[in-house]
Image 1 (tube, rainbow, N blue to C red):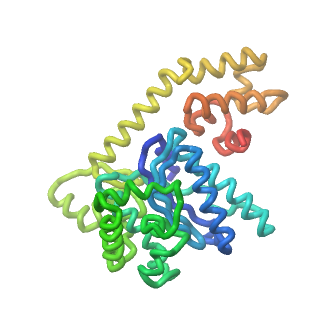
Image 2: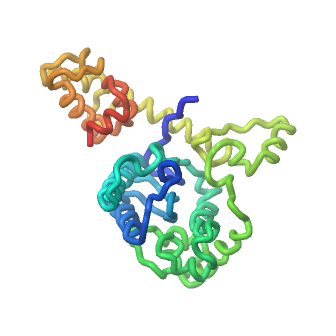
Image 3: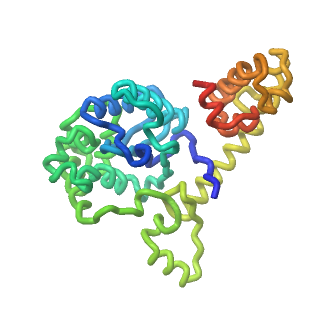
Length: 319
């Protein structure tokens, strides 16, 4: 079954899961961990991405974030590519460090924000990396210690989470910690690490109950939320795509931009869109791609389709 296009537009709450290729390490020591966290903070700040919760494990990482004006893909491309290059150079290795496609799930904030914060921040305890809440309070490689005021990262929005538990910081931290600790006995919570009907409803028993009652609920593997929330996200996505086709920021559609660029550069539009690599065509194609993606907000997969190349090829060319 082909992969669905990633849902990616600014201001959306995402639960992002990054895994090492073949379940291998993505960090080998504290120097690597500090490098990953430093890069996450830097890129989040530069892209206007808001980080609410995160944890860095040996072979994977969880991040709960609200995407900035450039969307999720720009943040993740800069974070993962930059870190992988640094890691490989330091450890004398070659090739991919991460699974080719990170997982991102759009989440219904009203229903899942605090549940996801708790789930993500309990990862080190569930995995046995640390043994107690007292250790978690001080653990540097998880956003819980930031919320508890033991570690400072200005790029993590602790206020937005703590205000959910009270107006005074001391009381809010106490209630937040109690909330997190109460989640230890709930186990792995598999319904929080994906989208789809089964996860959104909390398991097959709830889905079967709906079916017995003759109720139908819209679902999507890329979205964690109720049928109403899923429907709204898909409608908003469809409308954004329609708007993108009707008029880009420059007031022209994609075809017009490509036609004008080819005319200006004196190359064949048919050859460019047919995937040709002759002469200056690759250079012009990359120049057009930069305009479409960075200036006009076109999704890279869509730009690649119009420019006659694969998404991965276009991504490499732009880098």
